[in-house]
Image 1 (tube, rainbow, N blue to C red):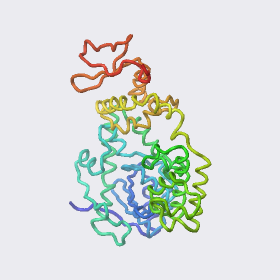
Image 2: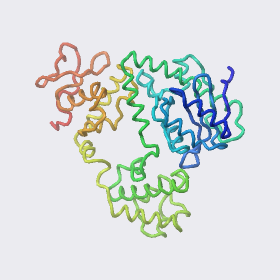
Image 3: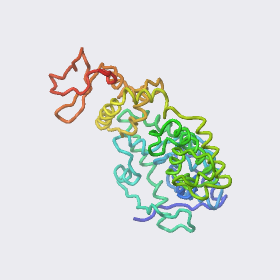
Image 4: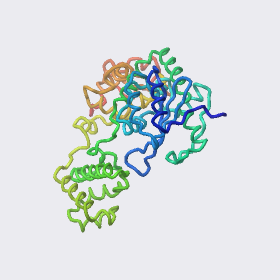
Length: 408
């Protein structure tokens, strides 16, 4: 298979010509290549642009891509695949993200595809093959090899055609607005990721710590993230997760005591690093955390825990039946938010509310029951008195016919 034609852009004049051409297009395809294995922030290595009849590969190592912001902020629709990390790269490169976005992975999710790779989606919907890539390829090397350039260009070669096909099927199913809403949600999501003060929640077994240790874990993990940002190194390079948890449990207050904590290295026991760690520990001790989330989530853990597993099974079945990626329909966090009674819960609004939110609320209130059929499916049935209507006639076995949080 021959490589798609492309233009290599490594100087201001070429960049200006490409951006002028793309600025007049109603839509364009975009992708990025980057590294972040040894840095906190992504290191941009390549930006790929495609519009009808043309592909350009922009070299951020040779030319300032700041002017790309003019295209991103323009009226054109940017078509990307699995765009979340690309948006972060673009924000780092030119302090801008597209004003309009269509993510082909999200769009395909509303057609029954489950987080598909670009290669699988192009093969399945366009009938073309995307060259395979070595996931360890060095995109920061110069010059790039022919194989690297061919792969980079192919990443955007079929995106516009893919958009046409996905949008056509979405329109036929009446789901264009659903996909547009989800793409806009992604576009508006903060690109900097998890706030430092919430980083501790990603630690293994963080939620099982006692209140005093939770406070220290929060403060130390936040210090680690802020230092990682400042020196541009991965957080794990600054301090291992094991050390964060160990410091939370032991909470040493003197530099000499840091040495006895598992995972803490000599470099952590002196100078500004030791001062920063001890200050974070002191702050954590002064601010213990009684719970790992909002009061609603804490109450959910005590009284509605059975509902999460029960409802998750039904939601997964609805997703399969409606041919929607389960992760798009409802995450566990979405379920918890609805069950906790949040007025802003995603599952209580729009198409999600109509598809599953109303049913979940009825189930938890004891107004409906889930029944297991002999065909291996769960059905949501209305409840009259203590019985699920349709149970006898349908031959289904009811598995919940009372309020889920009813202790009786």
